[in-house]
Amino acid sequence: MSVEDTIAALDRGEVRVAERFDGEWRVNEEAKRAILDYFRIRELEPQEVGPFEYLDKIPLKSGFAELGVRVVPPATARYGSFLSRGVILMPSYVNIGAWVGPRTMVDTWATVGSCAQIGADVHLSGGVGIGGVLEPVNARPVIVEDGAFIGSRCIVTEGTIVGEGAVLGAGVVITASVPIVDVTGSEPVEHRGLVPPRAVVVPGVRQREFPAGSYGLPTPLIVGWRQESHDLRLSLNEALREHGVGA
Image 1: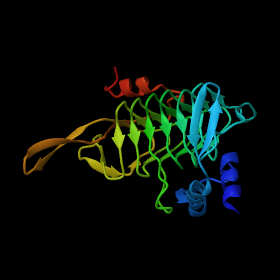
Image 2: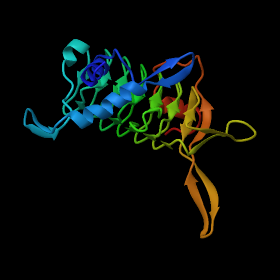
Image 3: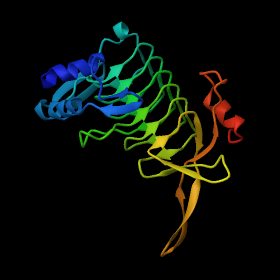
């Protein structure tokens, strides 16, 4: 396909930057190359939306009524992103190449970075930052699987996978290099770049010695697990309270 055809297919949801096959997420390098080429061939153009004026290379997404997507002003989704039926965008931002699953809520001032893959029935709370991963083309984007709850002001970057049904408490920061420590057993168990399915994660601190002294480094902690018996629409606060870390 040509660059324009690939971007149009991404916009319609017929092509995805990453998909799951046999339990593994695989990157579509051709789609990522097309996005990079699209930036190169496009020229800056003025765009007017009501009283707002923009100057950008990428058009804005449109046709929300036909898609069955609710978009609250001034939420913005770029052309080349895909929004499934039932998605709600509060004033937020979705970048090119992103895919957002059915019935997912992107709450106020949350951002979904380029190529991020967000599953069905996910809640991205206010101010969540889902990082974009365009280069290198073989790099996995950030992936948030079905039914996950991402708490207010969380940051998830560098191709991290948040497993199905996981719960991140407010302010959790996860990158590919930050250890996520399971403290539910008699010994700590570390994960990197992956939040296990149904894990309940809160911000933590681990002490580390430096030449200048001992300092605490942010370390997300797995403090519990959502039970299969829980309702899929269990609120973030309820999940955290059950494990003794909620308000």
